[in-house]
Amino acid sequence: MESIYGEYKDNLIDIMMYFKNLMDEYNDNVYKSDHTKMFEHISYRIKSEESMREKCRRKGIPENEYSALHILKDAIGIRVVSSFIDDVYTTINYIKTLDNCKIIEEKDYIKHAKQNGYRSYHIILAINVPFKDVNGNNPGEFYIELQVRTIAMDTWASLEHQLKYKKDILNQDLIDEISLFRGCR
Image 1 (tube, rainbow, N blue to C red):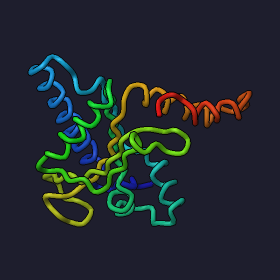
Image 2: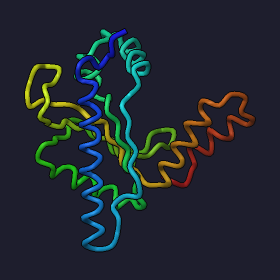
Image 3: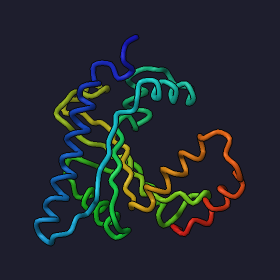
């Protein structure tokens, strides 16, 4: 079966690594100037073929590169994890200054936590790169789903995700209550 990302699959990796390196350079420059880091670590991924196909089916859209790269906008995922909430917003402000990037959508789940207590800052970022995109433009426009959060938010989100999918959990109601209460609000 052909890749859902078609001829653009290798470009996705290059774009992901370009943006990751851009963020690392930003972090290094801040450290050189004042001996602090804007973030502790960064993780990144290309959404798996299976996961992208499943999302297309769930959304009722064709399983092709146009859907995967233009409609859904989350083939590339990057998570930046900072120590402090102020660092999250400083990093967001830096991203807004990048010449070849524009924010398509942003959701501040830090100031406006989800009902279940989830907190993070989400951005859909359009990035212009010297590759042909799915619409035939060169330079092309690709999308990155970016999450910026603190270590505490990241830890809780990870634990909550694990608990959500773990079978045979005792006291599920208590876990749900802790999720809503969770001191991170």
